[in-house]
Each structure stands twice: as C-alpha cells, then as structure tokens.
Amino acid sequence: MARMVLHAVPTGTHTRGSDDDYPWSELVRASASGDERARRVLVERTLPMVHRMMSRLVGRRADHDDLVQTVYARCFRSLQTFRGDAKFTTWLGSICVNVASTYWQQRKNHASTDDVPELMLVDGKSPEAQIAARAGLRIVARLLSEMTPALRSAFVLHVLEGHDIDTVAAMSGTSVGATYKAVERARQQLEAQAAKHPDLARFLSEGSVRS
Amino acid sequence: MNAWTCADVEREVFGHLAGQLAETDALRAHVHLQGCAACAALSLQWDQWRTTLQASSVPVLSPDHAARLTAAIVADAARADVSVERAPVRTRRVRAAIGAAMAIAAAVLIVFVARAPSPPSAPVLVAQEPSASTAIPDVLLRPPPLVETPFAGPALANVSSARSAAPIAMPPHAPLVEAVDDPAPPRFVCPESLAAIAKHGKRAVHCLEGRGADAYLSVAESLLARGARADAEVYFVAIGERFAGNAAADALYASALIAIDTGREYVARERLERYLATAKDGAFRADAAWRLATLLTRARQLQRATPWLDEVIERSPSSSRRAEALFLLGSMYDRELDNLSGALVAYRRAMAEPSAAPEIKKAAETRIAELLQR
Image (tube, rainbow over all chains, first blue to last red; front, top):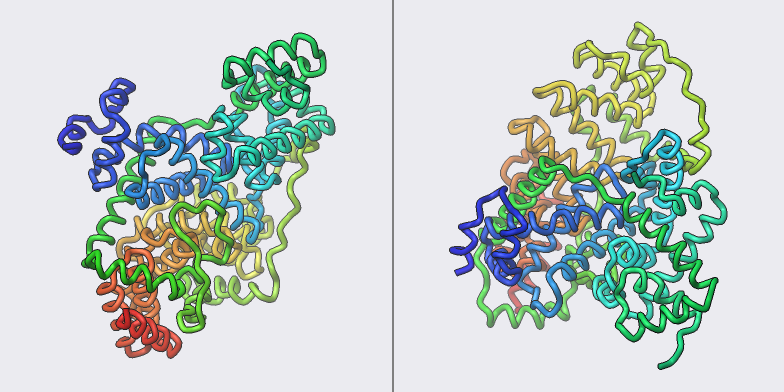
C-alpha cells in the first residue's frame, strides 16, 4: 500500500508540500520494506538535519559525507527495529550521535593531522570580521573536538540544534540528569575559553559572522 | 509556587532561551531574571553566544551536493539489500535456536570490529567477548602489506618498510589565534627541474601545472623514495584530480594506500571507493576491494563490506586471499545476517581453497562444527 502512495512522489522534486502528504510512519514502513523511492524521499527529507548535525558533532572534514552515508547505512539496516515509540528524527539523531561517538573513539586511537576540524561556515561583513570569526570558530571547533563525546553531543544537540533536554537524553542514550550536567560542563568550558581568548569572546558576543 | 534560584536558571538557561520551559517554569525563570542582575547577564550573554554559534555552524549543502549524496545513500542501501537477499534466510525456529546459542557462542567478526570500544548506546551492533574457539585468525587482523603497488615497486614499497622504522611525525596542532597574525608567505619561485620541485615537496605541486601525468608521477616517486609520504600523497591526489584513465585511477589507489598507512581510514575508504568506481578493470582492483572490505569491517559497516568481499572472491588471483574473504563473508552471514546456510557455504569454501592459511582452515572448521551443533 505504501509503495503505491510513494510511487506518486516524483524523484528529486521533494517539496515541503510532499512532506505533509506522506506521513513518517508510511515512509518508514515502505523504506524498511526496501522501497527505493520511499528511501529517497526519507533521505531527502532528513538529509539537511543529518548533514548539519554531523557537521556540528564532528566538524567539517574530508570524510564528512562518508559519515553521513554511515548514518544512513545504519539507519536502513536497523529500520525494521524502529518501533515508533520516539519520533523518527529523534531515532535518526541517536544514530548520528552514535556514529559521531564511534568516529571520535577511532580518532583517539589514530591521531592525525586532520584531528582539528575544518572551519565552519563564516559569512562576515568585512575582512576584519571574517578574521575575528575565523579565530573564534577555530577555538570553538578545537574546544568541541577536545570535549568528551558525551559533553560535545549534549552541547551540540541542546545549544546548537535546539533540542530539549529530554530529546537530547534520548538521542544520547543517557539520563536527563547526566545530560543537564554535560550541558553545564560544556557551557563552563566555553566560558573559560572565552575568558582566555579575547577573539573568541568578541566573536561570540558581537556575532561578527552575522550580516 | 517555589521561586527559582540562580542554580535553577543556570541549569535551564538554554531551555529558557529556546522557549522550551513549561509555562510555570517559564514564569519562575522570568521572575528570577527580573530580580537577579547576574542571571539576567548570563541569560543575555548566552542568548548572543547561542545565536552566533548557531548561525556560524550551519554547513552549506548545495542542491547538487544533496542530490549526489542522496543517490549514493540510496544506491548503497540497495546494494546492501542485494547482499542480504542473495543467501537464503533460516526459518524462525532455527533462528530462535541460534539466537540462544549465540548468547553462549562468542562473536568472531566483532573481534575484528571491536578494536575501539563500542559506544554505550550502539543501536546496531552489540560487541561480544570472543571465546578461544572462535577468535578470528590473526592473519585477518593484519592489514595487507603495501608492497603490491601501482608505482615503481621499490618506491611505494618504501612506504611499507618505513612504517615500522620511521613512524610519521605528526606536526603539532596549528595555533588557534596566532595564525591570524601570520604574515603573508614569501613568493615562491618555481624551479625548473623535477628534482628541484621534489625538493620543495607539496609546496611546489603547482609548479607542475601544464605538465603531463608523468611529471607528477616522477616527483611523487622521488618523494616516496625519500620517505616524504605526506608530500607524495599530494602529488598522487593531484594526478587523480587532473588526469583521467589508468594513471589517474592508480594514483588514487596509491594515495589511498598512504592514507591507510597514516591511519586515516575514512579518507582511505573514500579513495578506495572512488578507485573501485572508476577503475572497472584496474590492475589493483581485487587488492583494493580487499582493503576496502577490511576497512569497512573495522568501521562496523559490515553489510557495506559484503559486495567487496564478493569481488575479492570472484577476482582475486590469490587463493589465500580468497579464503580470507570467504571466512569474513561466513562470519558476516553467521553473525550479522543470521544466515546459517550462507555461513556454512562460505566457511566450507574457505576451507576448500588450496592455499588457505592453516589458521583460517582451523577457524572455519571450528565455526562449521559449532553451527552444525545448533
């Protein structure tokens, strides 16, 4: 049944409207049964979230797309185990956290020159603003890369991605109390770095990347 | 209504800023912030910081990039399906029996995979302790040697020989802020001779603009001979990017070998996948497929590894390598796909390979006996 509905979705022309037309439950069920079109729609619908989340969790790296593919490989492999107790995006987010966590553990064992992630997007008004933003972002990226996976994922998911604490706890597979503590510790670490680095403090306070 | 303390506000500052607090909590926060200058300042500061961080960490995902990525993901999933469907699946009854037996028997492949500890909430794989009888043969734990190389055997073979003698010296992390004030580098004058270009390493790669692939190759080999792997890698990558045909594919493969040797497995996987996608009849295809399969296995992407194991089994001229691939495939069927008959066939074929290593034969025999006992 799901296949029939989903075949009406033109490939590559996914719009917000089609999001509303095809409920998650149908997409998930059809994807789990191997419907390629459903999978495509599911990926198109969630790719911006996964791409952004992985960027924030591991930084922009040469192998970023590989990590995104890993997330979906795990997703499709385990899709039949998704029971619908949580939102699908929360479940997918937990896979992102898991893939990022594995990645960082592997990096720990294989330190290399690209351990500090590339700079994130900078969209400054002037060269001076760009320079300040770059310096600030490098510190943030470095700080995130030095945090434990638990702290990093809690901070990224709650502060940057804007998920509430309960959702962050579900995605991270930790308790709500532990998530609160992780966010607090990450916040304190960033405040300590800002106190040490004037460029970072200026960048964060003045929002020099904003146009 | 209990009034909120500063600790409450600190704990909930992001929830407050995101408007995620329940109505009563939001009111408590509001009341506290009205009367506490320190918390009001904290809230204001984090409102600014959060906005800046959110705005500055949104990656660019162009429509083209998204389309490419989507196509790759969907194709990957379809390929994994084919691997799963190829072998018959056991009945539920047998599966239940094997599920119970698996609680006792130890994972074989996981030994290979679980070098890094599993994250606490791993949704897909559960690491299990190996037993003595099912430990994976050591031959599969060793990465393939780097002697079978596209370019000048002795040159890239140095990569392998230098591996134990001279571990790569990683430069310290770049300074965080100081780099901003770095003066512009002095203008680099390109030398004419290839030897002189090689002397300057990766700084001089642009000096080969307009020259043929042979020039890049000469410099890369020269750098490899000196043990300058990182610099040589730049030239191999440049060949892969600027030229087409076998030379480009082989250079890509060489750069993948260097990435493997320097522990950058994700980069190596990406390059091996590109090599395998472009070099349909490449001389190193079977070797590349084996390396990719082992890397994917180590990265716990077991189903993605299956097609490459198949390719090794079909194309590798080495009987011992085929036996290793068959053993890994058997482990995959056994542990991941819950496919008893597929596992038995793979283990038996591994044993039947004339040049199978003794440890592979022994491990396959043990696994067959265990599976038959179920």
